[in-house]
Structure formats: C-alpha cells, structure tokens
Image (cartoon, rainbow, N blue to C red; front, side):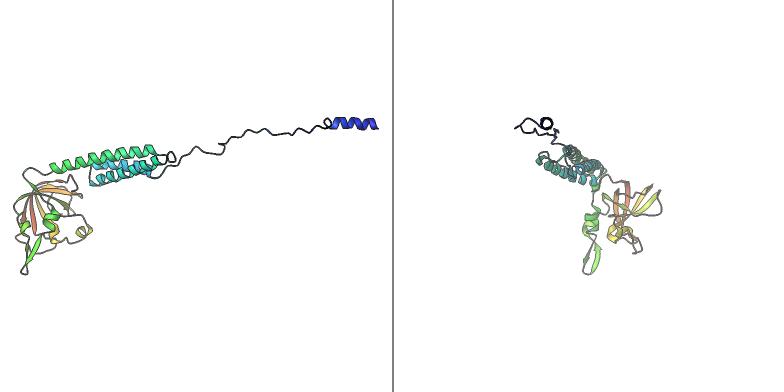
Length: 249
C-alpha cells in the first residue's frame, strides 16, 4: 500500500521543492485598435469653395462682385483657421480653391463691370442718375408755389443717358411708349408711382418689355399738358436709344 501511494505522489506533482510554472496567454496588442483615420473639417472650408463658384457671377453683375469679396474674406479665414490648427483640421484644399476663385473673380469681375460702365453711354450723351439728379431734386417750393428744380430744368432738351425699370403692362412687344421708374420697389409696381419717380418714355421703334434694369438715351422734356391723372407723368423723354442696362449702377 505504501508503495502505491509513493507512485501516486511521483505522478501527480513536480519535483519536491519546485514551484509550478505559471501559464500565460500570449495575445498581441495593437494600440491603434478601435481608432479611425479621420480629421474633422470646419464648415467654413466647403462654404468657401461654394462661395468661390458663386463668385463667378461677378462677371455678370454687382451681386456677383459682392459675393466675390465675401468669398475672398471667408476663404482667407478658412485658410487661417485650418493653418493654425497644425493638422487638427482638414479642408485646406477647399479653402485654397475658394480663395483662388473668389479672389480672381473679385478682381476680374470688378474690372469688367467698370469697363462696361465706362463704355455703355452712347457717344454724345451725358450720364444722368435718375435717383440723384432727377427724383431726389425734382421740385422746389418758393413763396408757396411748387416748381421744377432748376437743376432738373437744366437737363431739359439735353442729350442724356439714364437707367430705370419699365412699368409692367399687358403689352410685351412693340412698345412705343412706357413709364420708366427709378427702381423696382413694391411701392412703384404696386400702385401709383410718385410724380418724381416716373418718366414717360417715347421710342420711335417698338421695344420689347424687359423686367430688368434698362437704359435709355435721348432728351428730357416737360409734359405741357400735364393734368395730374392716374399714371400721368410730368417728365417726358424722347428716346433715341433703348437697351438692357449692362451694369447695375
């Protein structure tokens, strides 16, 4: 019996005095596990690119020029914000594209608009502002009597060039007479325009109705038969030239 117990002791355990070797699970560890290769992009970056595309309208009008300058400022801010983040923000390409588009459009569009402005007046005519030179001055009151302002009277019979908006009528083509208004505000198109804000234009050839700003060149005159009727104008204009305005100013 003692011999059997000794045999069991020899099989079941290690050598006397030796410690059992621990069993360790060998699992490799990846410190990047669960992480994403993602860098956030500030909203101002794609916005600058979109404004850059909108800035191309600068070659077609004042609205585009304004958008070009706004886009340039937004793009510069985007470049500054992304650059100073030292890699924390992405989107520098969008910001640079927006800056290039907006910057070149701001310069090129402005130059183009000024070129059109300088060359849109037909030879022999003087540019006159409907708002500043006619509407705002219009009339004076002396000794209780209302009369046309001397500066406006000085324009009568002179070859001038001015811009405005056609008062909408049911006729769309072959128009030989129409009201020219200083602006397209609801106050003018919704009812009776103010006397100083409308000019009755006569054209020798029929013209097409244009909802946008138009330009006319000819001679201003006063209506000798003015009675103060509905949509009756005191200021008259014999037009030698009619076209859509090339600039917004």
